[in-house]
Image (cartoon, rainbow, N blue to C red; front, side):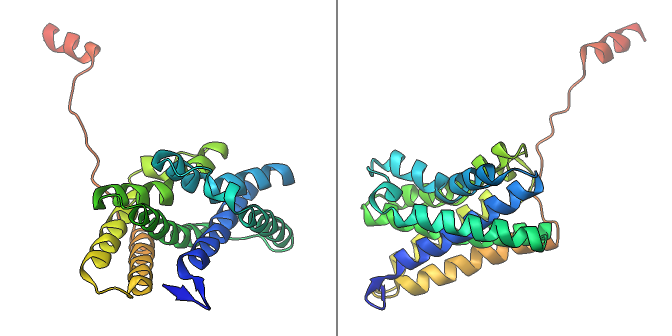
Length: 222
């Protein structure tokens, strides 16, 4: 799986890092953070999920310590986006679309890393979800938002479904089709996430019917 004699997955990882760094900047700009705050949020958004993935898998030093290019890419992206946002404010929909793209890319990255380390498919699916959503979780916590995985929105579900698609394509398709599997999975996750946003698709909410102590007391008095 190569592109210009460089692993395709590496290009994919850099692209995902740029996209998630942008989502971090956009989220920080909505909260009117200063430049340092913007860089911090952009940094943890871009590398948060991958860092947790590597630590869970025992893949140390983590990827951005081994390859410091990630740090420079994130800093450059956050600065460029910060400057651009000062001249032309971004719409909230831009954040949502960018986040969907990053989710699709990092879902593939996480599953691919686990498979490369010869972990079973179920672990690959879990790592795909973890890599895809945890950076956004940290971003939302730092910007005082409820993380999307705790809402009714189809977010982590999209990552999980995509990871399952990717693992099965890697299993059933012949060797040499890894790039195809990655592209199809990314489009699947991005499409599912954007469809959920556009049509307001949500997961069902579990509601437990119960009576408060006051209601029970009133019922006894009747």
